[in-house]
Amino acid sequence: MSTKISMTEAKLDDTAAMRQFLAAIPDGDQLAKVLENPGGISSRAYEDETWTARFVASNGHTVRCFAVSDITIDQAEMIAAVRMDLLACNADEFADMVALALGPTL
Image (cartoon, rainbow, N blue to C red; front, side, top):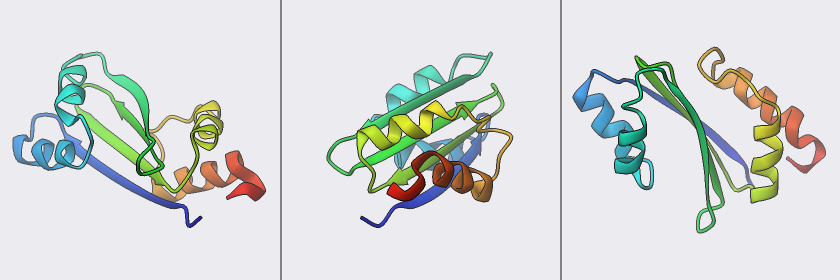
């Protein structure tokens, strides 16, 4: 497996950026409804077909998604167990957290 990590983010009040952000996420229309929560959200999802986990967080103004591809659902759960503030970290910090969570399985 060749694990890849990507990060995308958008301002919730930027219609064009949100359209692009949601287009890359399966069931993005459902996520759009969840993002209407003004208090923010933290969520994750796993796609069996692509072996991709998505970790999404919003503070009511900005939304960020980290996608980790080519991992199993068990590995996605190991990443989720670390409990990191997704809005406070950058792509490198998230990658370090994934490496810590998955250890030698990465």
